[in-house]
Image (cartoon, rainbow, N blue to C red; front, side, top):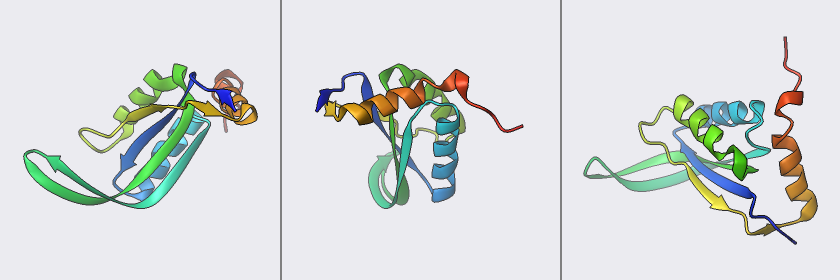
Length: 117
């Protein structure tokens, strides 16, 4: 295992699969993340505007380089339907060298991406 202090997992909840897919696709196409996992059927319980609430959500787990956090936050805030979306960055302490290199390679390809016409 290799020290991975330059990488993060980002947790974002979305109200449904369609929204989660849109956010994942946008982050991937912008090369802000190397991977997005969509975890369905998350039951969230929380305080909102002074009331206890409950909702079914999709959890998105993004893998990215720490250098992309600001741009990823802007993208999520611009495209997310929630007034206050969950965006939590967790540092990756260690990981396999090949996997970490893969994350770095994929998020650094931004200028080399061939776009569809």
